[in-house]
Amino acid sequence: MKLTTFGAAQTVTGSMHLVEHNGHKLLLDCGTYQGKREESYHVNLNFPFNPAEIDAMILSHAHIDHSGNIPNLVKQGFKGPIYATNATMDLADIMLRDSGHIQENDIKYLNQKRRKKGLPNLEPLYTQKDALMAMPQFRSLWYDEKRQVIPGVVAQLVEAGHIIGSAAVVLDYFDEAGKPKRFWYSGDIGRYDVPILRDPVLPSGAQTVLMECTYGDKLHERMDDSYEEFIDAVNRTYNRGGKIIVPAFAIGRTQNLTYFLSEAMLNKDIPEIPVVVDSPLAVNASDLYRKHTECFDDETWQFIAQHRMQGLDFENIIYTRSVDESKALNDWQEPMIIISASGMAEAGRILHHLKNNIEDGRNTIMIISWQAPHTLGRRLADRERKVNIFGKEYYRKAEVVTIGGLSAHAGQNLLVEYALSSKETLEKLILVHGEEDAASALMEKFAEHSELPEAVFAENGQTFEL
Image (cartoon, rainbow, N blue to C red):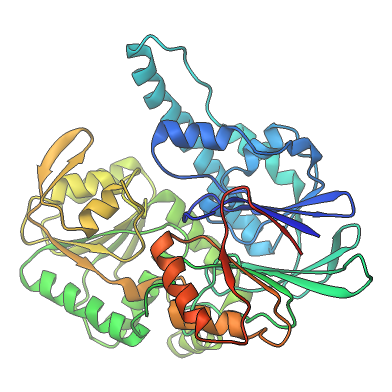
């Protein structure tokens, strides 16, 4: 078996890994690379392989950096099945259609700049229609169900604990000598005791582990400590009469946050403040969380049983869908919490809320997730005083609060535990989905364990013989 890393190699975006075995090709994830617009467009448009030659694909979860280029893959000739959990299939449906809409809008913006330079127009990477055309190729694969996905390779999906439907991918095969081998791709690794979701399953019996290292340099705070930070920030802002603006990923982070808020109000840790989820995608995703209760952990079921409600629904929460509903929030003067996409504050309704609230010192901007370089979210997390929104400069007076402990990614300790879980059989340990500092710090921790093989921080296009 041969593995080539074509995405999320020494970066945290664009996951895409090609497995070749017995003359057949299996793609693991097909995410969009997210960066500067023109660079992203060209990277995502041009695959480093012929999509028509891919026999099958497995999608670990629905986040756009893992799923976002699937419509383009199909558009360019891929005709094979796409295996995923039921929840991932449903989430991918709404995520990819939303992404197609964004692709269409982004290309309009890009073409305006190109016309000023006398350059020809470009076509969108894909459209909403292209996203719809890709969905018939999805095939359901239940957790722990085994299925031959290409000749000689049997796959199963196991709980990753990152968002609903998220999975690690386990591939069992025989090497050239007829010896059984196991390859384990982590996808994005979740955390223990995260609201709603079950804990991630650790690798077992694997000879090769391909794993993410996003927070390889960070020891996450305990979730309870993060909860206290969150409560303090809410109460502090409420007492000065301000609003809390939260850029949050529509899938995963938004639902975890609303669960926290329902629990906090029930326990009277915070006042009964209005909470608005202002993102059509997040609203649709929350509907799917309610549908896929098979992904809930025991604690969530207990919470629902005791309070006869789900953690995504409580008296003070408002889900908005229309633009008019979103605009009306500007007229609200009392304290409130607005949760809106995108998570890195690069597009969507969150930009309008930031624009309208960033220069008011009573308000708080709460950053609860990793922010990519060059994004507005990163500039806010770095507490820059002047930022540009919609081409206009704003002077930030709002308080910025960063709560890293709410991340849906595993921290350094769990990443080390993840690798050690297959120490008796492990031959290759390959790191992806991380920046250099995170990977270096994690490899230093790995080096403290002599039972682990030397880890490799995969480069883009690097090939491994498994």
